[in-house]
Amino acid sequence: MAGLSDRVRALVRPEIAALSPYDPNFTPCDINLSANENTYGMPEEVRRAIDEAIARSQTNRYPDPMSNELRDLIAAWRGVARENVCVGNGGDELLFNFFLAFGGPGKTLVDCPPTFTVYDIYSGMLGTQVVRCWRDDETFELDMPRLLEAARTADMVMVTSPNNPTGNVISRDDAERLCEACPGIVMIDEAYIEFCEEGVSCEPLLASCDNLIILHTFSKAFCLAGVRVGYVLAAPDVIEALGAVRQPYTADVFAQATAQTVVSMRERFVPTIKTIRSERERLSRDLAAIGGVRVWPSQGNFILVRMQQAGIVRARLRDQYSILVRDFSQAPGLDDCLRVTVGTPAENDRLVQAVASILKEVA
Ligand code: PMP
Image 1 (cartoon, helix red, strand yellow):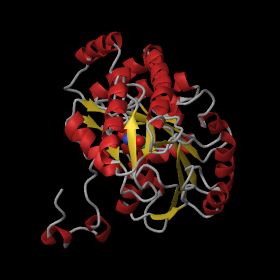
Image 2 (tube, rainbow, N blue to C red):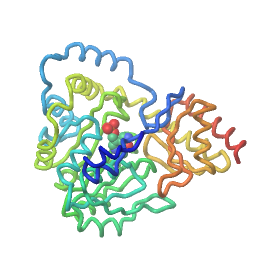
Image 3 (cartoon, rainbow, N blue to C red):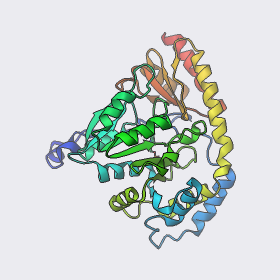
């Protein structure tokens, strides 16, 4: 993407001039393991039910601005009330609204890189000051003493669990201590929580921590990355603030109908989620068995790996094998790292064979 022209640079706020559009670095390939989607696709019967729900949707009327039917379904599923739920156009919009409501000039965010870079982008856009509490450079675990210290004066704290791209989770005890330490709002981004072992989610803390927001999305486990629906759970007054800054109609009739169907049929996703978890372990073992590849344990549907010449390996995977993975080799703290999404067994086999062949040539 070309940078801003001088003419436009002179017209925008300085913090906008420093930004460039988010670029997921996508190239069409036979096997796409680059964006942490569910590569198994929508279960057939759910897809049929979605098609019927869409066919019933009225397009001449505005959608329900707060998605109340969907909120009620989510609330019943998660064991909370409608007032605890806010729906958005993907997790991304909810993150943006979080910064819009609680960030801005004079406000401070604590985040824990290496992590999802969108937090940094939105902070920059809205003029929020960022305090970075770096993860351990070997294990990528949180530096809890430093994080708690920083949280004591923060307006916002962001922890991703499982963390993208490193796969680490925060323990419930640590999350509770964080909420207690922070006078502001703590968001735990649980976009990948369905791929974790039982009991990892910090959701139960909502009952006692009224400054906690939990972010969820339908994009990953529930195969709706293309539809754009996510939700947050929080105390009613926090939801009010998020409701106040949101654009009213971002969850359109198709998105609401689709997400309602998915929530009602959520059990149908369980077998695939189990397979992704077991494939994650198999893929981790197989990649680690290739000489020169370091693999970090992950609780997400992706794995962080390090190898020499990672940038070249990534390019060869794409150009010679038509396999797309995400390059983090130039990202701070992630030298020579790639992130691979867990695919189907056949996709994973092809990835392992391709990485092994490439490394034989480039090492
Ligand atoms: N949080 C994390 C950690 C993510 O990785 C992503 C997507 N890559 C999101 C939130 C947002 O996802 P979506 O907008 O598709 O819901």
